[in-house]
Image (tube, one colour):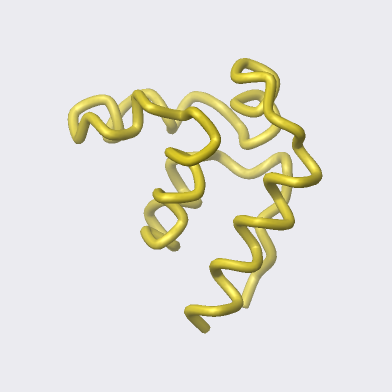
Length: 73
């Protein structure tokens, strides 16, 4: 299992680990609810950029998103 890191593209994370969508939504990334936006916007930003845009603590987010992936693995 590859660990999610701050420089990864949000869209690629969601493609490889769809179970992480709930973590993104929980942290305020509500545009990802829209399937049309989910196919375009997340491919333009990294996890770090997304966290900055939404004032989300990057380290806590990475910890949580990686925990979800571990549990699915």
